[in-house]
Amino acid sequence: MSNEKKLGYHGPRGMVRYDIPPAPESDKRFTPGIKTITEAQRETKVLNEADVIVVGGGPGGVAAAITAARSGARTVLIERYGHLGGMATGGLVNIIPNMGDVYGNHLIGGFCHEFIQRLQAQDAAFAPAPAQWGSTEPQVLKYYKDASFHHFFVRRNAEGKECLVYSAILDPEIGKNELNRMAMEAGVKLLLHSWVSDVVMEGDTVKGVIFQSKSGRQAVLGKVIIDCTGDGDLLPFSGAESEDYIDPDFRITHLCFGVWIGGVEFRAFDKFMSAQPDDYTQLMNDLYDNGLYVGFFRGMLKNQENMAWLHPHFKTKCQTDVEEMSRMDVAGREKAVKTWELLRDRAPGFEKSYIMLTGPQLGTTGGRRLVGQYSLRESDLYRTEPFEDTIAIFANNDRAEESLKFNKIYVPYRALLPKDVKGLMVACRAFSSDDVANTYFNLIPHCMCFGQAAGAAAAIAVEKGIDVKDVPYAELKAKLIEGGAILP
Image (cartoon, rainbow, N blue to C red; front, side, top):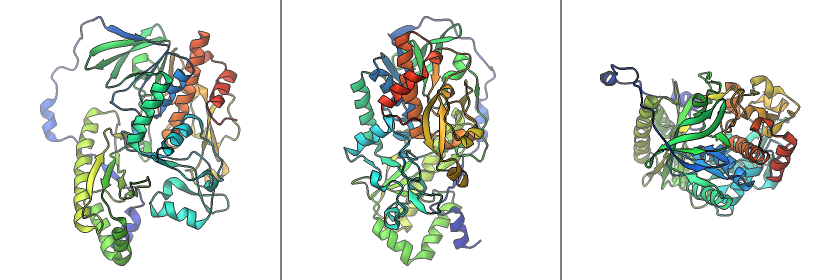
């Protein structure tokens, strides 16, 4: 295979999927002789009582907690890391895509849009100006193509013309702080560095959660619990039905190991690509042949123009398998260093570069999902009318010809509700859906929409003294629209 053909297959603008190393033979030394142990019954201290408990401070969790607190509910947000934002910050997945369609229509507003605007005011987010949404001007599109961000910003409309969609890039560190500010302003009580390990059940109703931290084992009791863990961690504890099948070729089988390389002089690198195409191709092929990271995005934030953002994906068998996650983290870091060394030694413009940052948390993309009162299935992606309880409208930008025929996707409130468990909602990528619907509509802005809807519904349920499944949709819709959501 020639270099030219190889580059066309796995070049810097393609998707390379890396393998996680299998368990080493030495792991057999740790095979237990005893399969289970019996734990003693114990008393657990109740740390707090609240109206709403949100578990997980990722995109869905922050939207849920802040929305509920703004609506007057006493809200506790429990997060396992020391920061908020989840994949959008700690996972370095700082790309917020598909907030509008190919014709410039704005579809995702509300919390997500507010967050981006607050960051833009600090030069900590980049997004096209509204006047450019839907633009087909070649000079407008060139900027995004040159930065290798065309996949997230550039699509084709029904006329076959390339056009610009409303997506955004954010600074993860400023994003973490801004989410803290928003939570504090709303009156959310934060419990960071806390990992929920069980739920408190009373019959078929979730009444609270148990979590572990440096303070030991404690509980928080509440009237509504919202699972925003991303992986539906509360579902097995509560007995709520779930599914986890994923087609092995889908994006949501991947883990991502984000890497930022700083100090890159892109003018020298661009000159290298244009003046020495054979050497550039050979370099890309050598990266690929050695199992290293091929391709990167260029920093588009103010004062970060010399940054290369790498988002390599690893194929997994199970994204919640702690042993596989551990091997992936080790492999991901080793590949990051070797990739940087090769670029530093052979790519002009990378001579003074350095690894600035790797993701504090693995980029997870899919896994366990609720089987709810309604499950969004592949057939719903061909739906032309809203559900009677629609809580979000998403731009269907990523499904080629199908996107042009069915350019909007509707999500019902019932996709956040378990069938037989009360007092619980799921507002993250674990929303009720099959793997097809989930792989296209479980991204950061989508999860923020789920979270905003769940937080609003929880506040209504608490105020009325009813279960979340009985929340009147008219009231929920009005509250969401008041919060900036765009609904039918």
